[in-house]
Image 1 (cartoon, rainbow, N blue to C red):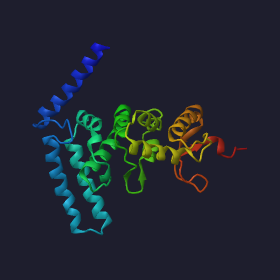
Image 2 (tube, rainbow, N blue to C red):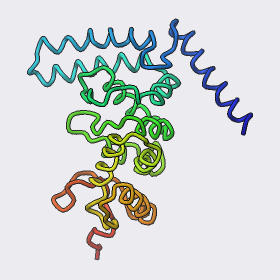
Image 3 (cartoon, rainbow, N blue to C red):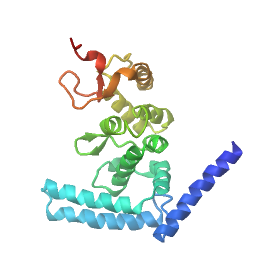
Image 4 (cartoon, one colour):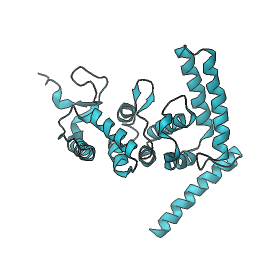
Length: 236
Protein backbone atom coordinates (compact mmCIF):
# COMPACT_ATOMS: atom_id res chain seq x y z
CA UNK A 1 0.00 0.00 0.00
CA UNK A 2 2.89 2.37 0.79
CA UNK A 3 4.41 1.88 -2.65
CA UNK A 4 0.99 2.30 -4.29
CA UNK A 5 0.52 5.60 -2.49
CA UNK A 6 3.96 6.79 -3.60
CA UNK A 7 3.17 5.80 -7.19
CA UNK A 8 -0.13 7.70 -7.17
CA UNK A 9 1.54 10.82 -5.77
CA UNK A 10 4.27 10.56 -8.39
CA UNK A 11 1.78 10.24 -11.22
CA UNK A 12 -0.21 13.20 -9.92
CA UNK A 13 2.93 15.29 -9.67
CA UNK A 14 3.93 14.26 -13.19
CA UNK A 15 0.56 15.41 -14.49
CA UNK A 16 0.92 18.78 -12.86
CA UNK A 17 4.47 19.19 -14.16
CA UNK A 18 3.20 18.34 -17.61
CA UNK A 19 0.58 21.09 -17.27
CA UNK A 20 3.32 23.49 -16.17
CA UNK A 21 5.48 22.83 -19.21
CA UNK A 22 2.55 22.81 -21.63
CA UNK A 23 1.03 26.06 -20.45
CA UNK A 24 4.20 27.82 -19.36
CA UNK A 25 2.94 28.70 -15.91
CA UNK A 26 2.60 27.26 -12.44
CA UNK A 27 -0.31 24.78 -12.46
CA UNK A 28 -3.54 25.55 -10.60
CA UNK A 29 -3.06 23.48 -7.46
CA UNK A 30 -5.39 25.63 -5.36
CA UNK A 31 -8.14 28.20 -5.78
CA UNK A 32 -5.85 31.06 -4.78
CA UNK A 33 -2.96 30.06 -7.06
CA UNK A 34 -1.53 32.64 -9.52
CA UNK A 35 -2.94 30.72 -12.47
CA UNK A 36 -6.47 30.83 -11.02
CA UNK A 37 -6.13 34.56 -10.34
CA UNK A 38 -5.10 35.11 -13.96
CA UNK A 39 -7.92 32.87 -15.19
CA UNK A 40 -10.43 34.78 -13.08
CA UNK A 41 -9.37 38.09 -14.63
CA UNK A 42 -9.83 36.65 -18.13
CA UNK A 43 -13.18 35.12 -17.19
CA UNK A 44 -14.46 38.37 -15.65
CA UNK A 45 -13.43 40.25 -18.78
CA UNK A 46 -15.71 37.98 -20.80
CA UNK A 47 -18.43 38.17 -18.13
CA UNK A 48 -18.45 41.97 -18.45
CA UNK A 49 -19.86 41.55 -21.96
CA UNK A 50 -23.21 40.65 -20.36
CA UNK A 51 -23.73 44.34 -19.58
CA UNK A 52 -24.03 45.11 -23.30
CA UNK A 53 -27.32 43.21 -23.63
CA UNK A 54 -28.52 42.37 -20.09
CA UNK A 55 -31.98 41.16 -21.18
CA UNK A 56 -30.89 39.10 -24.19
CA UNK A 57 -30.97 35.36 -23.41
CA UNK A 58 -29.14 34.38 -26.57
CA UNK A 59 -26.39 36.88 -25.78
CA UNK A 60 -26.12 35.46 -22.24
CA UNK A 61 -25.73 31.94 -23.63
CA UNK A 62 -23.04 33.05 -26.09
CA UNK A 63 -21.09 34.73 -23.29
CA UNK A 64 -21.31 31.56 -21.22
CA UNK A 65 -20.04 29.52 -24.15
CA UNK A 66 -17.01 31.82 -24.38
CA UNK A 67 -16.36 31.34 -20.67
CA UNK A 68 -16.67 27.58 -21.09
CA UNK A 69 -14.15 27.65 -23.96
CA UNK A 70 -11.73 29.60 -21.76
CA UNK A 71 -11.96 27.06 -18.93
CA UNK A 72 -11.63 24.12 -21.32
CA UNK A 73 -8.49 25.64 -22.84
CA UNK A 74 -6.97 26.53 -19.48
CA UNK A 75 -7.60 23.66 -17.04
CA UNK A 76 -6.04 20.20 -17.29
CA UNK A 77 -7.50 17.06 -15.72
CA UNK A 78 -4.88 16.95 -12.90
CA UNK A 79 -5.63 20.59 -12.11
CA UNK A 80 -9.37 19.97 -12.01
CA UNK A 81 -8.85 17.09 -9.60
CA UNK A 82 -6.80 19.29 -7.28
CA UNK A 83 -9.43 22.04 -7.47
CA UNK A 84 -12.16 19.50 -6.71
CA UNK A 85 -10.26 18.32 -3.65
CA UNK A 86 -9.93 21.89 -2.33
CA UNK A 87 -13.24 23.41 -3.45
CA UNK A 88 -14.47 23.46 0.15
CA UNK A 89 -12.70 26.83 0.27
CA UNK A 90 -15.24 28.28 -2.19
CA UNK A 91 -17.95 30.19 -0.26
CA UNK A 92 -21.38 28.55 -0.31
CA UNK A 93 -23.05 31.93 -0.87
CA UNK A 94 -21.81 32.32 -4.45
CA UNK A 95 -23.91 29.62 -6.10
CA UNK A 96 -24.44 31.56 -9.29
CA UNK A 97 -23.29 30.86 -12.85
CA UNK A 98 -22.33 34.55 -13.07
CA UNK A 99 -19.72 33.96 -10.36
CA UNK A 100 -16.28 32.77 -11.43
CA UNK A 101 -15.70 30.20 -8.68
CA UNK A 102 -19.12 28.62 -9.03
CA UNK A 103 -18.79 28.49 -12.81
CA UNK A 104 -15.51 26.62 -12.43
CA UNK A 105 -17.18 24.10 -10.09
CA UNK A 106 -19.98 23.56 -12.62
CA UNK A 107 -17.47 23.21 -15.45
CA UNK A 108 -15.46 20.62 -13.50
CA UNK A 109 -18.65 18.68 -12.65
CA UNK A 110 -19.68 18.45 -16.31
CA UNK A 111 -16.14 17.53 -17.41
CA UNK A 112 -15.98 14.72 -14.84
CA UNK A 113 -19.39 13.43 -15.96
CA UNK A 114 -18.35 13.40 -19.61
CA UNK A 115 -15.04 11.71 -18.80
CA UNK A 116 -16.61 9.16 -16.47
CA UNK A 117 -14.39 10.34 -13.62
CA UNK A 118 -16.33 8.84 -10.74
CA UNK A 119 -13.74 9.55 -8.05
CA UNK A 120 -13.42 13.13 -9.21
CA UNK A 121 -17.18 13.63 -9.01
CA UNK A 122 -17.46 12.09 -5.55
CA UNK A 123 -14.61 14.28 -4.33
CA UNK A 124 -16.18 17.40 -5.83
CA UNK A 125 -19.76 16.72 -4.70
CA UNK A 126 -18.68 15.81 -1.17
CA UNK A 127 -17.28 19.33 -0.81
CA UNK A 128 -19.48 21.53 -3.00
CA UNK A 129 -22.63 20.34 -4.76
CA UNK A 130 -24.11 22.48 -7.55
CA UNK A 131 -27.80 21.60 -7.64
CA UNK A 132 -28.03 22.88 -11.22
CA UNK A 133 -25.49 23.07 -14.02
CA UNK A 134 -27.37 25.41 -16.31
CA UNK A 135 -30.70 27.21 -15.98
CA UNK A 136 -33.41 24.54 -15.86
CA UNK A 137 -30.90 21.67 -15.97
CA UNK A 138 -30.67 19.81 -12.67
CA UNK A 139 -27.32 18.24 -11.83
CA UNK A 140 -28.93 14.90 -10.92
CA UNK A 141 -30.77 14.70 -14.24
CA UNK A 142 -27.57 15.37 -16.19
CA UNK A 143 -25.70 12.86 -14.03
CA UNK A 144 -28.28 10.09 -14.46
CA UNK A 145 -29.27 10.66 -18.05
CA UNK A 146 -26.03 11.68 -19.73
CA UNK A 147 -23.40 9.96 -17.58
CA UNK A 148 -24.98 6.54 -17.92
CA UNK A 149 -22.63 5.51 -20.74
CA UNK A 150 -19.53 7.12 -19.24
CA UNK A 151 -19.73 5.37 -15.87
CA UNK A 152 -21.60 2.54 -14.20
CA UNK A 153 -24.53 3.42 -11.93
CA UNK A 154 -23.86 7.19 -11.88
CA UNK A 155 -26.66 7.90 -9.39
CA UNK A 156 -24.64 6.08 -6.72
CA UNK A 157 -22.19 9.00 -6.90
CA UNK A 158 -24.73 11.00 -4.90
CA UNK A 159 -24.79 8.40 -2.14
CA UNK A 160 -21.01 8.07 -2.10
CA UNK A 161 -20.57 11.83 -1.93
CA UNK A 162 -23.13 12.06 0.89
CA UNK A 163 -21.33 9.40 2.94
CA UNK A 164 -18.01 11.25 2.59
CA UNK A 165 -19.36 14.75 3.09
CA UNK A 166 -18.69 16.52 6.39
CA UNK A 167 -20.27 19.86 5.52
CA UNK A 168 -23.81 20.20 6.89
CA UNK A 169 -25.10 22.43 4.07
CA UNK A 170 -23.66 20.23 1.33
CA UNK A 171 -25.10 17.10 2.97
CA UNK A 172 -28.49 18.81 3.10
CA UNK A 173 -28.35 19.61 -0.63
CA UNK A 174 -27.28 16.11 -1.55
CA UNK A 175 -30.07 14.61 0.56
CA UNK A 176 -32.61 17.00 -1.00
CA UNK A 177 -31.51 15.90 -4.47
CA UNK A 178 -31.71 12.20 -3.58
CA UNK A 179 -35.21 12.75 -2.16
CA UNK A 180 -36.32 14.47 -5.37
CA UNK A 181 -35.12 11.49 -7.41
CA UNK A 182 -36.42 8.70 -5.16
CA UNK A 183 -39.34 9.91 -3.03
CA UNK A 184 -41.81 9.09 -5.78
CA UNK A 185 -40.42 5.57 -6.11
CA UNK A 186 -41.16 2.72 -3.68
CA UNK A 187 -38.25 3.53 -1.39
CA UNK A 188 -38.72 3.03 2.36
CA UNK A 189 -39.53 6.48 3.70
CA UNK A 190 -37.61 8.15 6.50
CA UNK A 191 -37.53 11.67 7.90
CA UNK A 192 -33.84 11.18 8.64
CA UNK A 193 -31.79 12.23 5.63
CA UNK A 194 -28.94 9.79 6.18
CA UNK A 195 -31.36 6.88 6.50
CA UNK A 196 -33.32 7.91 3.43
CA UNK A 197 -30.17 8.26 1.30
CA UNK A 198 -29.09 4.79 2.45
CA UNK A 199 -32.57 3.35 1.70
CA UNK A 200 -32.57 4.97 -1.75
CA UNK A 201 -29.16 3.64 -2.72
CA UNK A 202 -30.04 0.13 -1.51
CA UNK A 203 -33.35 0.23 -3.40
CA UNK A 204 -31.54 1.28 -6.56
CA UNK A 205 -29.02 -1.56 -6.24
CA UNK A 206 -31.83 -4.11 -5.91
CA UNK A 207 -33.95 -2.71 -8.74
CA UNK A 208 -31.49 -1.22 -11.22
CA UNK A 209 -32.03 -4.03 -13.74
CA UNK A 210 -35.49 -2.53 -14.33
CA UNK A 211 -34.42 1.12 -14.42
CA UNK A 212 -33.23 3.34 -17.22
CA UNK A 213 -32.92 7.12 -17.58
CA UNK A 214 -36.27 8.75 -18.26
CA UNK A 215 -36.48 10.65 -21.55
CA UNK A 216 -38.89 13.21 -20.12
CA UNK A 217 -40.83 13.92 -16.97
CA UNK A 218 -44.48 12.88 -16.81
CA UNK A 219 -47.43 13.99 -14.64
CA UNK A 220 -47.22 10.69 -12.76
CA UNK A 221 -43.49 11.06 -12.17
CA UNK A 222 -42.74 14.78 -12.24
CA UNK A 223 -39.38 14.56 -10.50
CA UNK A 224 -37.57 11.24 -10.81
CA UNK A 225 -35.15 10.74 -13.69
CA UNK A 226 -35.77 6.99 -13.76
CA UNK A 227 -38.10 4.95 -15.93
CA UNK A 228 -39.13 1.61 -14.40
CA UNK A 229 -39.97 -0.97 -17.07
CA UNK A 230 -42.34 -2.69 -14.64
CA UNK A 231 -44.65 0.31 -14.91
CA UNK A 232 -45.01 0.06 -18.65
CA UNK A 233 -48.10 -1.70 -20.05
CA UNK A 234 -47.34 -5.19 -21.28
CA UNK A 235 -47.48 -5.70 -25.01
CA UNK A 236 -49.92 -8.30 -26.24
